[in-house]
Length: 315
Length: 292
Image (cartoon, rainbow over all chains, first blue to last red; front, side, top):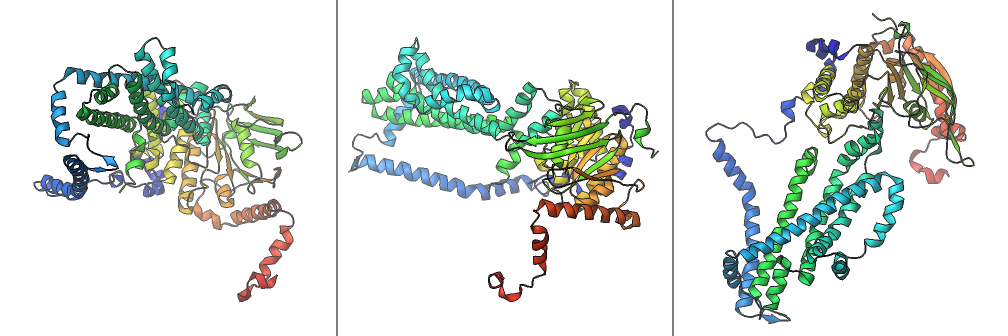
Protein backbone atom coordinates (compact mmCIF):
# COMPACT_ATOMS: atom_id res chain seq x y z
CA UNK A 1 0.00 0.00 0.00
CA UNK A 2 1.25 3.46 -0.80
CA UNK A 3 1.95 5.82 2.02
CA UNK A 4 0.98 9.43 2.28
CA UNK A 5 4.48 10.55 1.37
CA UNK A 6 4.51 8.65 -1.88
CA UNK A 7 1.09 10.05 -2.64
CA UNK A 8 2.57 13.47 -2.17
CA UNK A 9 4.72 12.96 -5.19
CA UNK A 10 1.77 12.44 -7.49
CA UNK A 11 1.88 15.19 -10.07
CA UNK A 12 -1.19 17.30 -9.34
CA UNK A 13 -1.84 17.83 -13.04
CA UNK A 14 -1.72 14.09 -13.65
CA UNK A 15 -4.13 13.61 -10.81
CA UNK A 16 -6.38 16.26 -12.28
CA UNK A 17 -6.22 14.61 -15.69
CA UNK A 18 -7.29 11.36 -14.11
CA UNK A 19 -10.18 13.18 -12.53
CA UNK A 20 -10.98 15.06 -15.73
CA UNK A 21 -14.71 14.46 -15.92
CA UNK A 22 -15.20 15.12 -12.24
CA UNK A 23 -13.63 18.54 -12.46
CA UNK A 24 -16.16 19.52 -15.04
CA UNK A 25 -18.85 18.82 -12.46
CA UNK A 26 -17.24 20.92 -9.83
CA UNK A 27 -18.25 24.57 -9.85
CA UNK A 28 -15.34 26.97 -9.85
CA UNK A 29 -14.71 28.28 -6.34
CA UNK A 30 -14.98 31.93 -7.32
CA UNK A 31 -18.33 31.26 -8.95
CA UNK A 32 -19.78 29.81 -5.77
CA UNK A 33 -19.55 32.94 -3.64
CA UNK A 34 -23.13 34.01 -3.17
CA UNK A 35 -24.05 37.64 -3.03
CA UNK A 36 -20.58 38.87 -3.95
CA UNK A 37 -20.94 42.46 -5.16
CA UNK A 38 -20.41 42.90 -8.85
CA UNK A 39 -17.32 44.92 -9.66
CA UNK A 40 -18.37 48.55 -10.02
CA UNK A 41 -16.13 51.40 -11.17
CA UNK A 42 -13.77 52.12 -8.31
CA UNK A 43 -14.56 55.77 -7.48
CA UNK A 44 -18.31 55.38 -7.59
CA UNK A 45 -18.42 52.15 -5.67
CA UNK A 46 -18.84 53.40 -2.06
CA UNK A 47 -21.49 55.95 -2.96
CA UNK A 48 -23.45 53.43 -4.95
CA UNK A 49 -23.19 50.90 -2.21
CA UNK A 50 -24.55 53.37 0.37
CA UNK A 51 -27.33 54.32 -2.04
CA UNK A 52 -28.19 50.70 -2.63
CA UNK A 53 -28.19 50.02 1.09
CA UNK A 54 -30.48 53.00 1.71
CA UNK A 55 -32.85 51.89 -1.02
CA UNK A 56 -33.20 48.46 0.55
CA UNK A 57 -33.14 49.43 4.24
CA UNK A 58 -34.97 52.79 4.19
CA UNK A 59 -38.57 51.54 3.83
CA UNK A 60 -38.09 49.10 6.69
CA UNK A 61 -36.48 51.78 8.86
CA UNK A 62 -39.32 54.23 8.13
CA UNK A 63 -41.96 51.64 9.04
CA UNK A 64 -40.16 50.85 12.29
CA UNK A 65 -39.99 54.51 13.24
CA UNK A 66 -43.61 55.00 12.24
CA UNK A 67 -44.91 52.16 14.42
CA UNK A 68 -42.84 53.22 17.43
CA UNK A 69 -43.81 56.86 16.84
CA UNK A 70 -47.51 56.00 16.76
CA UNK A 71 -47.16 54.12 20.04
CA UNK A 72 -45.43 57.03 21.80
CA UNK A 73 -47.92 59.48 20.33
CA UNK A 74 -50.85 57.45 21.64
CA UNK A 75 -49.16 57.22 25.03
CA UNK A 76 -48.56 60.98 25.00
CA UNK A 77 -52.13 61.94 24.14
CA UNK A 78 -53.69 59.27 26.37
CA UNK A 79 -51.81 60.59 29.41
CA UNK A 80 -52.24 64.26 28.42
CA UNK A 81 -56.03 63.99 28.25
CA UNK A 82 -56.21 61.41 31.10
CA UNK A 83 -58.11 58.94 28.94
CA UNK A 84 -60.53 56.75 30.88
CA UNK A 85 -62.38 54.11 28.86
CA UNK A 86 -62.23 50.99 30.99
CA UNK A 87 -58.39 51.10 30.90
CA UNK A 88 -57.48 54.21 32.80
CA UNK A 89 -54.61 56.54 32.03
CA UNK A 90 -55.32 58.77 35.00
CA UNK A 91 -52.26 57.70 37.02
CA UNK A 92 -50.06 56.71 34.09
CA UNK A 93 -46.89 58.83 33.73
CA UNK A 94 -46.50 60.70 30.46
CA UNK A 95 -43.55 60.11 28.09
CA UNK A 96 -42.13 63.45 29.18
CA UNK A 97 -42.17 62.55 32.88
CA UNK A 98 -40.57 59.21 32.11
CA UNK A 99 -37.87 60.90 30.09
CA UNK A 100 -37.12 63.40 32.90
CA UNK A 101 -36.94 60.66 35.51
CA UNK A 102 -34.73 58.57 33.24
CA UNK A 103 -32.31 61.47 32.92
CA UNK A 104 -32.24 61.73 36.71
CA UNK A 105 -31.75 57.99 37.22
CA UNK A 106 -28.94 57.92 34.66
CA UNK A 107 -26.93 59.85 37.28
CA UNK A 108 -27.84 57.46 40.09
CA UNK A 109 -25.36 54.80 41.22
CA UNK A 110 -28.15 52.97 42.98
CA UNK A 111 -29.98 52.45 39.72
CA UNK A 112 -26.88 51.06 38.00
CA UNK A 113 -26.35 48.80 40.96
CA UNK A 114 -29.87 47.40 40.50
CA UNK A 115 -29.09 46.65 36.86
CA UNK A 116 -25.81 45.05 37.80
CA UNK A 117 -27.39 42.85 40.47
CA UNK A 118 -30.09 41.62 38.07
CA UNK A 119 -27.57 40.88 35.32
CA UNK A 120 -25.36 39.02 37.77
CA UNK A 121 -28.28 36.86 38.90
CA UNK A 122 -29.23 36.09 35.30
CA UNK A 123 -25.64 35.27 34.38
CA UNK A 124 -25.20 32.95 37.36
CA UNK A 125 -28.55 31.16 37.15
CA UNK A 126 -28.45 30.87 33.38
CA UNK A 127 -24.84 29.64 33.28
CA UNK A 128 -25.52 26.91 35.82
CA UNK A 129 -28.68 25.95 33.91
CA UNK A 130 -26.71 25.80 30.66
CA UNK A 131 -23.95 23.58 32.06
CA UNK A 132 -26.34 21.23 33.87
CA UNK A 133 -29.06 21.28 31.21
CA UNK A 134 -26.69 20.51 28.33
CA UNK A 135 -24.70 17.89 30.24
CA UNK A 136 -27.77 16.08 31.58
CA UNK A 137 -29.55 16.48 28.25
CA UNK A 138 -26.66 14.80 26.42
CA UNK A 139 -26.64 11.93 28.93
CA UNK A 140 -30.41 11.45 28.95
CA UNK A 141 -30.60 11.70 25.18
CA UNK A 142 -27.73 9.34 24.51
CA UNK A 143 -27.94 6.70 27.23
CA UNK A 144 -31.03 4.65 27.95
CA UNK A 145 -30.01 4.09 31.58
CA UNK A 146 -29.68 7.80 32.30
CA UNK A 147 -32.99 8.41 30.61
CA UNK A 148 -34.79 5.74 32.66
CA UNK A 149 -33.32 7.09 35.89
CA UNK A 150 -33.54 10.85 35.45
CA UNK A 151 -36.28 11.60 32.98
CA UNK A 152 -39.26 10.65 35.23
CA UNK A 153 -37.94 12.97 37.95
CA UNK A 154 -37.58 15.90 35.57
CA UNK A 155 -40.97 15.24 33.99
CA UNK A 156 -42.52 15.41 37.46
CA UNK A 157 -40.79 18.65 38.41
CA UNK A 158 -41.13 20.39 35.06
CA UNK A 159 -44.82 21.39 35.21
CA UNK A 160 -44.21 23.39 38.43
CA UNK A 161 -43.52 26.96 37.28
CA UNK A 162 -40.29 28.45 38.64
CA UNK A 163 -42.24 31.20 40.44
CA UNK A 164 -44.19 28.59 42.41
CA UNK A 165 -40.85 27.64 43.94
CA UNK A 166 -40.34 31.04 45.55
CA UNK A 167 -41.56 30.24 49.10
CA UNK A 168 -39.82 26.87 49.06
CA UNK A 169 -36.63 28.42 47.69
CA UNK A 170 -36.57 30.98 50.48
CA UNK A 171 -36.64 28.15 53.02
CA UNK A 172 -34.20 25.96 51.08
CA UNK A 173 -31.38 28.38 50.48
CA UNK A 174 -29.35 30.21 53.09
CA UNK A 175 -29.63 33.69 51.57
CA UNK A 176 -32.17 35.63 49.58
CA UNK A 177 -29.58 36.07 46.85
CA UNK A 178 -29.06 32.33 46.35
CA UNK A 179 -32.79 31.63 46.31
CA UNK A 180 -33.32 34.22 43.55
CA UNK A 181 -30.45 32.72 41.53
CA UNK A 182 -32.05 29.31 42.11
CA UNK A 183 -35.39 30.53 40.73
CA UNK A 184 -33.64 31.99 37.69
CA UNK A 185 -31.78 28.72 37.22
CA UNK A 186 -34.99 26.68 37.44
CA UNK A 187 -36.72 28.82 34.85
CA UNK A 188 -34.05 28.33 32.22
CA UNK A 189 -33.02 24.77 33.13
CA UNK A 190 -36.01 22.89 31.71
CA UNK A 191 -36.15 24.52 28.26
CA UNK A 192 -32.40 23.93 27.90
CA UNK A 193 -32.63 20.34 29.12
CA UNK A 194 -35.59 19.40 26.92
CA UNK A 195 -34.20 21.00 23.78
CA UNK A 196 -30.84 19.30 24.32
CA UNK A 197 -32.56 15.91 24.68
CA UNK A 198 -34.58 16.65 21.56
CA UNK A 199 -31.37 17.63 19.75
CA UNK A 200 -29.61 14.40 20.75
CA UNK A 201 -32.62 12.34 19.67
CA UNK A 202 -32.68 13.98 16.27
CA UNK A 203 -29.02 13.36 15.45
CA UNK A 204 -28.91 11.57 12.10
CA UNK A 205 -28.01 7.95 12.99
CA UNK A 206 -25.87 7.64 9.89
CA UNK A 207 -23.51 10.23 11.39
CA UNK A 208 -23.08 8.07 14.48
CA UNK A 209 -22.40 5.03 12.34
CA UNK A 210 -19.94 6.92 10.19
CA UNK A 211 -18.09 8.11 13.29
CA UNK A 212 -17.94 4.57 14.71
CA UNK A 213 -16.46 3.34 11.42
CA UNK A 214 -13.80 6.02 11.76
CA UNK A 215 -12.72 4.64 15.12
CA UNK A 216 -14.45 7.02 17.56
CA UNK A 217 -14.53 6.12 21.25
CA UNK A 218 -17.77 6.36 23.21
CA UNK A 219 -16.70 9.67 24.77
CA UNK A 220 -15.47 10.92 21.42
CA UNK A 221 -18.87 10.16 19.95
CA UNK A 222 -20.58 12.31 22.58
CA UNK A 223 -18.07 15.13 22.41
CA UNK A 224 -17.31 15.20 18.69
CA UNK A 225 -20.56 14.08 17.08
CA UNK A 226 -23.59 14.21 19.38
CA UNK A 227 -22.76 17.62 20.90
CA UNK A 228 -22.05 19.52 17.66
CA UNK A 229 -24.96 17.80 15.89
CA UNK A 230 -27.29 18.92 18.72
CA UNK A 231 -26.00 22.51 18.85
CA UNK A 232 -28.79 24.04 16.76
CA UNK A 233 -31.41 22.56 19.12
CA UNK A 234 -29.34 23.46 22.17
CA UNK A 235 -29.27 27.08 21.05
CA UNK A 236 -33.03 27.06 20.56
CA UNK A 237 -33.19 25.91 24.19
CA UNK A 238 -30.79 28.64 25.29
CA UNK A 239 -32.87 31.33 23.57
CA UNK A 240 -36.10 30.12 25.18
CA UNK A 241 -34.30 29.55 28.49
CA UNK A 242 -33.00 33.10 28.51
CA UNK A 243 -36.52 34.44 28.07
CA UNK A 244 -37.91 32.31 30.89
CA UNK A 245 -34.91 33.19 33.08
CA UNK A 246 -35.87 36.88 32.87
CA UNK A 247 -39.52 36.14 33.60
CA UNK A 248 -38.54 34.12 36.66
CA UNK A 249 -35.94 36.61 37.83
CA UNK A 250 -38.25 39.61 37.70
CA UNK A 251 -41.03 37.74 39.49
CA UNK A 252 -38.64 36.51 42.17
CA UNK A 253 -37.17 39.98 42.65
CA UNK A 254 -40.62 41.52 42.96
CA UNK A 255 -41.66 38.99 45.58
CA UNK A 256 -38.60 38.42 47.69
CA UNK A 257 -35.92 40.72 46.46
CA UNK A 258 -33.60 43.30 47.67
CA UNK A 259 -32.00 45.16 44.81
CA UNK A 260 -32.42 44.24 41.21
CA UNK A 261 -34.40 45.83 38.45
CA UNK A 262 -37.56 43.84 39.26
CA UNK A 263 -37.33 44.99 42.86
CA UNK A 264 -36.77 48.56 41.62
CA UNK A 265 -39.93 48.40 39.50
CA UNK A 266 -42.08 47.01 42.31
CA UNK A 267 -40.64 49.45 44.81
CA UNK A 268 -41.47 52.34 42.47
CA UNK A 269 -45.11 51.27 42.61
CA UNK A 270 -45.03 51.10 46.42
CA UNK A 271 -43.39 54.53 46.64
CA UNK A 272 -45.86 56.04 44.13
CA UNK A 273 -42.97 56.86 41.75
CA UNK A 274 -45.06 55.93 38.76
CA UNK A 275 -42.60 57.16 36.13
CA UNK A 276 -39.98 54.79 37.53
CA UNK A 277 -42.27 51.82 36.84
CA UNK A 278 -42.14 52.59 33.13
CA UNK A 279 -38.36 53.04 33.31
CA UNK A 280 -38.00 49.68 35.06
CA UNK A 281 -40.12 48.03 32.39
CA UNK A 282 -38.14 49.58 29.56
CA UNK A 283 -34.81 48.62 31.14
CA UNK A 284 -35.99 45.04 31.68
CA UNK A 285 -37.00 44.87 28.02
CA UNK A 286 -33.70 46.29 26.80
CA UNK A 287 -31.60 44.01 29.05
CA UNK A 288 -33.62 40.97 27.97
CA UNK A 289 -33.15 41.93 24.34
CA UNK A 290 -29.41 42.32 24.86
CA UNK A 291 -29.16 38.90 26.51
CA UNK A 292 -31.07 37.23 23.67
CA UNK A 293 -28.86 39.05 21.18
CA UNK A 294 -25.77 37.77 22.98
CA UNK A 295 -27.10 34.20 22.74
CA UNK A 296 -27.75 34.64 19.03
CA UNK A 297 -24.27 36.05 18.45
CA UNK A 298 -22.68 33.21 20.37
CA UNK A 299 -24.74 30.75 18.32
CA UNK A 300 -23.57 32.26 15.04
CA UNK A 301 -19.98 32.15 16.27
CA UNK A 302 -20.17 28.50 17.35
CA UNK A 303 -22.16 27.31 14.34
CA UNK A 304 -20.56 28.89 11.28
CA UNK A 305 -21.83 26.03 9.12
CA UNK A 306 -25.39 27.17 9.78
CA UNK A 307 -24.74 30.60 8.26
CA UNK A 308 -25.86 29.51 4.79
CA UNK A 309 -28.97 27.71 5.89
CA UNK A 310 -30.35 30.22 8.39
CA UNK A 311 -29.75 33.45 6.54
CA UNK A 312 -29.51 32.26 2.97
CA UNK A 313 -33.17 31.50 2.52
CA UNK A 314 -34.51 34.70 4.07
CA UNK A 315 -35.99 37.45 2.00
CA UNK B 1 1.08 -3.40 -13.44
CA UNK B 2 -2.36 -4.93 -13.57
CA UNK B 3 -1.53 -8.05 -11.57
CA UNK B 4 -4.10 -8.81 -8.92
CA UNK B 5 -3.29 -7.88 -5.37
CA UNK B 6 -4.19 -11.43 -4.38
CA UNK B 7 -0.75 -12.48 -5.56
CA UNK B 8 1.01 -10.31 -3.04
CA UNK B 9 2.37 -12.45 -0.22
CA UNK B 10 1.33 -10.52 2.89
CA UNK B 11 -1.77 -8.85 1.53
CA UNK B 12 -4.51 -7.87 3.99
CA UNK B 13 -8.19 -7.14 3.72
CA UNK B 14 -9.33 -10.73 3.36
CA UNK B 15 -13.00 -11.02 4.29
CA UNK B 16 -14.49 -14.43 4.87
CA UNK B 17 -18.21 -14.93 5.46
CA UNK B 18 -18.92 -18.49 6.57
CA UNK B 19 -22.46 -19.88 6.81
CA UNK B 20 -23.81 -16.56 8.07
CA UNK B 21 -27.37 -16.30 9.32
CA UNK B 22 -28.91 -13.10 10.68
CA UNK B 23 -32.29 -13.10 12.37
CA UNK B 24 -34.05 -10.03 13.72
CA UNK B 25 -36.64 -9.99 16.45
CA UNK B 26 -37.49 -12.42 19.22
CA UNK B 27 -37.56 -16.16 18.68
CA UNK B 28 -41.24 -16.59 17.91
CA UNK B 29 -41.54 -13.65 15.53
CA UNK B 30 -37.98 -13.74 14.25
CA UNK B 31 -37.43 -12.64 10.68
CA UNK B 32 -34.50 -14.13 8.87
CA UNK B 33 -32.71 -11.45 6.87
CA UNK B 34 -29.65 -13.40 5.80
CA UNK B 35 -29.82 -17.15 5.35
CA UNK B 36 -26.71 -19.32 5.18
CA UNK B 37 -24.47 -16.97 3.22
CA UNK B 38 -20.88 -17.92 2.51
CA UNK B 39 -18.72 -15.61 0.47
CA UNK B 40 -15.27 -14.15 0.27
CA UNK B 41 -13.45 -10.96 -0.61
CA UNK B 42 -9.82 -11.74 -1.38
CA UNK B 43 -7.20 -9.10 -0.63
CA UNK B 44 -7.35 -6.35 -3.21
CA UNK B 45 -10.49 -7.67 -4.87
CA UNK B 46 -13.47 -5.54 -5.90
CA UNK B 47 -16.60 -7.50 -5.06
CA UNK B 48 -20.17 -6.44 -5.65
CA UNK B 49 -23.30 -7.86 -4.09
CA UNK B 50 -26.42 -7.35 -6.13
CA UNK B 51 -29.97 -8.34 -5.35
CA UNK B 52 -33.56 -7.11 -5.10
CA UNK B 53 -34.38 -4.52 -2.47
CA UNK B 54 -34.93 -5.97 0.98
CA UNK B 55 -32.84 -9.05 0.21
CA UNK B 56 -30.55 -8.53 3.17
CA UNK B 57 -27.53 -7.27 1.27
CA UNK B 58 -27.24 -4.22 3.50
CA UNK B 59 -27.59 -6.47 6.55
CA UNK B 60 -24.71 -8.58 5.26
CA UNK B 61 -22.60 -5.44 4.85
CA UNK B 62 -23.56 -4.28 8.34
CA UNK B 63 -22.30 -7.55 9.78
CA UNK B 64 -18.98 -7.07 8.00
CA UNK B 65 -18.88 -3.49 9.29
CA UNK B 66 -19.55 -4.70 12.82
CA UNK B 67 -22.94 -3.03 13.37
CA UNK B 68 -24.93 -6.26 13.36
CA UNK B 69 -23.98 -9.49 15.13
CA UNK B 70 -24.31 -12.84 13.32
CA UNK B 71 -27.04 -15.13 14.65
CA UNK B 72 -25.11 -18.09 13.30
CA UNK B 73 -21.88 -18.49 11.38
CA UNK B 74 -18.84 -16.25 11.35
CA UNK B 75 -17.58 -13.18 9.56
CA UNK B 76 -13.88 -12.49 9.77
CA UNK B 77 -11.37 -10.08 8.30
CA UNK B 78 -7.82 -11.38 8.19
CA UNK B 79 -8.85 -14.07 10.66
CA UNK B 80 -10.42 -11.74 13.24
CA UNK B 81 -14.16 -11.58 13.87
CA UNK B 82 -15.75 -8.28 12.79
CA UNK B 83 -17.65 -7.88 16.04
CA UNK B 84 -17.49 -4.10 16.28
CA UNK B 85 -16.93 -1.16 13.94
CA UNK B 86 -13.32 -0.26 13.33
CA UNK B 87 -11.28 2.13 11.23
CA UNK B 88 -9.80 -0.98 9.52
CA UNK B 89 -13.06 -1.19 7.62
CA UNK B 90 -13.89 2.13 6.02
CA UNK B 91 -17.52 2.63 5.18
CA UNK B 92 -19.32 4.80 2.65
CA UNK B 93 -23.07 5.17 3.06
CA UNK B 94 -25.80 5.88 0.56
CA UNK B 95 -26.98 8.89 2.52
CA UNK B 96 -24.35 11.59 2.65
CA UNK B 97 -22.84 11.04 6.05
CA UNK B 98 -20.47 14.00 6.21
CA UNK B 99 -20.43 15.92 9.50
CA UNK B 100 -22.17 19.17 8.55
CA UNK B 101 -20.36 21.17 11.25
CA UNK B 102 -16.91 20.28 9.93
CA UNK B 103 -15.26 21.67 6.83
CA UNK B 104 -14.43 19.23 4.04
CA UNK B 105 -10.83 18.94 5.26
CA UNK B 106 -11.83 18.46 8.91
CA UNK B 107 -14.22 15.72 7.80
CA UNK B 108 -11.34 13.90 6.13
CA UNK B 109 -9.17 14.48 9.20
CA UNK B 110 -11.80 13.04 11.55
CA UNK B 111 -10.61 9.43 11.48
CA UNK B 112 -6.96 10.46 11.78
CA UNK B 113 -7.82 12.57 14.82
CA UNK B 114 -9.36 9.51 16.49
CA UNK B 115 -6.07 7.72 15.89
CA UNK B 116 -4.31 10.52 17.78
CA UNK B 117 -2.38 11.92 14.83
CA UNK B 118 -1.21 15.49 15.45
CA UNK B 119 -2.82 18.42 13.68
CA UNK B 120 -0.01 19.14 11.20
CA UNK B 121 0.23 15.58 9.95
CA UNK B 122 -3.54 15.33 9.75
CA UNK B 123 -3.79 18.44 7.66
CA UNK B 124 -1.03 17.28 5.33
CA UNK B 125 -2.58 13.84 4.84
CA UNK B 126 -6.06 15.26 4.30
CA UNK B 127 -4.83 17.78 1.74
CA UNK B 128 -2.97 15.07 -0.14
CA UNK B 129 -6.05 12.89 -0.34
CA UNK B 130 -8.33 15.78 -1.28
CA UNK B 131 -5.87 16.69 -4.02
CA UNK B 132 -6.11 13.18 -5.43
CA UNK B 133 -9.89 13.42 -5.53
CA UNK B 134 -9.78 16.86 -7.17
CA UNK B 135 -11.32 18.48 -4.11
CA UNK B 136 -8.47 20.56 -2.73
CA UNK B 137 -10.11 23.82 -3.81
CA UNK B 138 -13.05 22.96 -1.57
CA UNK B 139 -11.14 22.00 1.57
CA UNK B 140 -12.61 24.87 3.60
CA UNK B 141 -16.18 24.51 2.33
CA UNK B 142 -18.86 23.04 4.50
CA UNK B 143 -20.60 19.90 3.19
CA UNK B 144 -23.87 21.76 2.59
CA UNK B 145 -22.09 23.89 0.02
CA UNK B 146 -21.17 20.87 -2.13
CA UNK B 147 -23.04 18.95 -4.81
CA UNK B 148 -24.14 15.37 -4.16
CA UNK B 149 -21.30 13.89 -6.21
CA UNK B 150 -18.71 16.00 -4.42
CA UNK B 151 -20.11 15.06 -1.02
CA UNK B 152 -19.83 11.40 -1.87
CA UNK B 153 -16.25 11.89 -3.10
CA UNK B 154 -15.43 13.47 0.25
CA UNK B 155 -17.13 10.48 1.90
CA UNK B 156 -14.86 8.09 0.02
CA UNK B 157 -11.76 10.13 0.78
CA UNK B 158 -12.72 10.29 4.47
CA UNK B 159 -13.15 6.52 4.60
CA UNK B 160 -9.78 6.02 2.88
CA UNK B 161 -7.92 8.45 5.15
CA UNK B 162 -7.44 5.96 7.98
CA UNK B 163 -5.80 3.49 5.55
CA UNK B 164 -8.43 0.78 5.99
CA UNK B 165 -7.85 -2.72 4.66
CA UNK B 166 -11.26 -2.80 3.09
CA UNK B 167 -13.81 -0.29 1.87
CA UNK B 168 -17.45 -1.17 2.51
CA UNK B 169 -19.87 0.69 0.28
CA UNK B 170 -23.64 0.56 0.73
CA UNK B 171 -25.18 1.75 -2.54
CA UNK B 172 -22.98 4.84 -2.36
CA UNK B 173 -24.09 6.26 -5.70
CA UNK B 174 -27.77 5.39 -5.33
CA UNK B 175 -28.82 8.98 -4.71
CA UNK B 176 -26.84 10.44 -7.62
CA UNK B 177 -28.07 11.19 -11.13
CA UNK B 178 -27.00 8.90 -13.98
CA UNK B 179 -24.26 11.18 -15.35
CA UNK B 180 -22.64 11.79 -11.97
CA UNK B 181 -22.85 8.08 -11.22
CA UNK B 182 -20.76 7.14 -14.25
CA UNK B 183 -18.11 9.68 -13.33
CA UNK B 184 -18.11 8.52 -9.71
CA UNK B 185 -17.64 4.92 -10.83
CA UNK B 186 -14.53 5.95 -12.77
CA UNK B 187 -13.20 7.90 -9.81
CA UNK B 188 -13.81 4.96 -7.49
CA UNK B 189 -12.03 2.53 -9.84
CA UNK B 190 -9.17 4.98 -10.02
CA UNK B 191 -8.90 5.30 -6.23
CA UNK B 192 -9.21 1.54 -5.76
CA UNK B 193 -6.30 0.91 -8.13
CA UNK B 194 -4.16 3.52 -6.42
CA UNK B 195 -4.80 2.24 -2.90
CA UNK B 196 -4.97 -1.49 -3.70
CA UNK B 197 -7.49 -2.31 -1.00
CA UNK B 198 -10.40 -4.71 -1.01
CA UNK B 199 -13.84 -3.31 -1.76
CA UNK B 200 -17.21 -4.80 -0.88
CA UNK B 201 -19.80 -2.89 -2.84
CA UNK B 202 -23.58 -3.16 -2.48
CA UNK B 203 -25.70 -2.12 -5.42
CA UNK B 204 -28.88 -2.89 -7.29
CA UNK B 205 -27.53 -1.48 -10.55
CA UNK B 206 -26.38 -4.26 -12.91
CA UNK B 207 -24.19 -2.03 -15.10
CA UNK B 208 -22.53 -0.56 -12.04
CA UNK B 209 -21.67 -4.00 -10.70
CA UNK B 210 -20.21 -5.15 -14.03
CA UNK B 211 -18.23 -1.97 -14.61
CA UNK B 212 -16.62 -2.00 -11.18
CA UNK B 213 -16.21 -5.58 -10.00
CA UNK B 214 -13.90 -8.56 -10.25
CA UNK B 215 -16.74 -10.78 -9.11
CA UNK B 216 -20.45 -10.26 -8.51
CA UNK B 217 -22.53 -12.17 -5.99
CA UNK B 218 -26.24 -12.31 -6.75
CA UNK B 219 -28.49 -12.60 -3.72
CA UNK B 220 -31.97 -14.11 -3.57
CA UNK B 221 -35.08 -12.40 -2.31
CA UNK B 222 -35.50 -12.41 1.48
CA UNK B 223 -34.27 -14.37 3.29
CA UNK B 224 -31.13 -13.54 1.37
CA UNK B 225 -28.93 -16.37 0.15
CA UNK B 226 -26.18 -16.35 -2.44
CA UNK B 227 -27.86 -17.38 -5.68
CA UNK B 228 -24.90 -17.11 -8.00
CA UNK B 229 -21.31 -15.95 -8.19
CA UNK B 230 -20.40 -14.38 -11.51
CA UNK B 231 -16.76 -13.57 -12.33
CA UNK B 232 -16.32 -10.43 -14.45
CA UNK B 233 -13.38 -11.16 -16.69
CA UNK B 234 -13.41 -7.89 -18.62
CA UNK B 235 -9.91 -6.39 -18.85
CA UNK B 236 -8.97 -3.32 -16.84
CA UNK B 237 -8.91 -0.39 -17.13
CA UNK B 238 -12.55 -0.59 -18.05
CA UNK B 239 -14.04 2.00 -20.36
CA UNK B 240 -17.66 2.97 -20.96
CA UNK B 241 -17.56 1.61 -24.54
CA UNK B 242 -16.96 -1.91 -23.18
CA UNK B 243 -20.68 -1.86 -22.47
CA UNK B 244 -21.15 -2.80 -26.12
CA UNK B 245 -18.75 -5.77 -26.12
CA UNK B 246 -20.26 -9.28 -26.49
CA UNK B 247 -18.73 -10.43 -23.20
CA UNK B 248 -20.26 -7.48 -21.32
CA UNK B 249 -23.66 -8.06 -22.87
CA UNK B 250 -23.49 -11.77 -22.08
CA UNK B 251 -22.79 -11.05 -18.38
CA UNK B 252 -25.45 -8.39 -18.30
CA UNK B 253 -28.07 -10.74 -19.76
CA UNK B 254 -27.10 -13.43 -17.27
CA UNK B 255 -27.29 -11.05 -14.29
CA UNK B 256 -30.53 -9.55 -15.45
CA UNK B 257 -32.22 -12.94 -15.76
CA UNK B 258 -31.05 -13.89 -12.27
CA UNK B 259 -32.21 -10.65 -10.72
CA UNK B 260 -35.56 -10.40 -12.52
CA UNK B 261 -36.43 -13.82 -11.17
CA UNK B 262 -35.61 -12.72 -7.63
CA UNK B 263 -37.28 -9.34 -7.90
CA UNK B 264 -40.51 -11.00 -8.87
CA UNK B 265 -40.19 -13.34 -5.92
CA UNK B 266 -39.53 -10.38 -3.66
CA UNK B 267 -42.70 -8.68 -4.86
CA UNK B 268 -44.78 -11.68 -3.84
CA UNK B 269 -45.41 -15.03 -5.54
CA UNK B 270 -48.92 -14.31 -6.73
CA UNK B 271 -47.94 -11.18 -8.54
CA UNK B 272 -45.65 -13.25 -10.73
CA UNK B 273 -48.39 -14.49 -13.02
CA UNK B 274 -51.49 -12.41 -12.58
CA UNK B 275 -49.63 -9.16 -12.03
CA UNK B 276 -47.62 -9.43 -15.20
CA UNK B 277 -50.52 -10.81 -17.16
CA UNK B 278 -52.33 -7.62 -16.28
CA UNK B 279 -49.94 -5.61 -18.41
CA UNK B 280 -51.48 -7.15 -21.51
CA UNK B 281 -55.02 -6.04 -20.74
CA UNK B 282 -56.03 -3.11 -22.88
CA UNK B 283 -57.70 -0.63 -20.61
CA UNK B 284 -58.42 1.91 -23.29
CA UNK B 285 -60.73 4.84 -22.70
CA UNK B 286 -63.20 2.89 -20.57
CA UNK B 287 -61.13 2.95 -17.40
CA UNK B 288 -60.43 0.36 -14.76
CA UNK B 289 -63.85 0.52 -13.11
CA UNK B 290 -65.66 -0.85 -16.14
CA UNK B 291 -63.18 -3.68 -16.59
CA UNK B 292 -63.92 -4.92 -13.12
